[in-house]
Length: 111
Image (cartoon, rainbow, N blue to C red; front, side):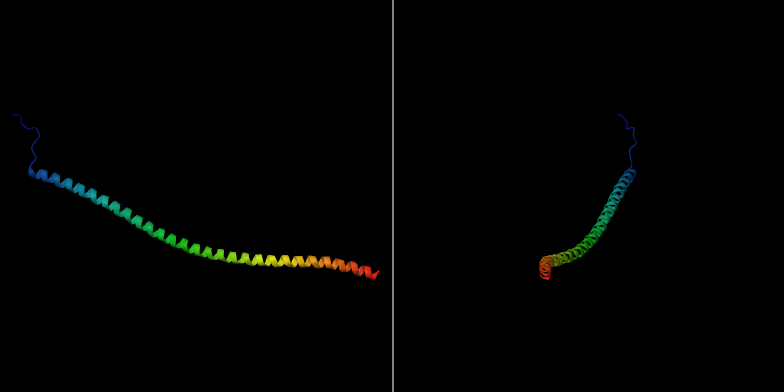
């Protein structure tokens, strides 16, 4: 029979190694959980910031919508004013033609 070259572990040594491996696994799990909690916290903060940005974008959109409505109203008024100015221009041109005719008639009468 051959004798084992490696010395046999005692029960106490075996338990010590098992305890160290369990501690190592627990430490690894705690570190993993810590990293996950940090990632989750960052995601929550990012979501909170996104909510703020979304709220600001909504407020800006409302302000722009008011500006667009005001601009649309101004354009309608300008279109009405343009139409009135065109009517006035036509009336002035008609009166200029009329005054030329009256001037010719007056000159003819004065001769």
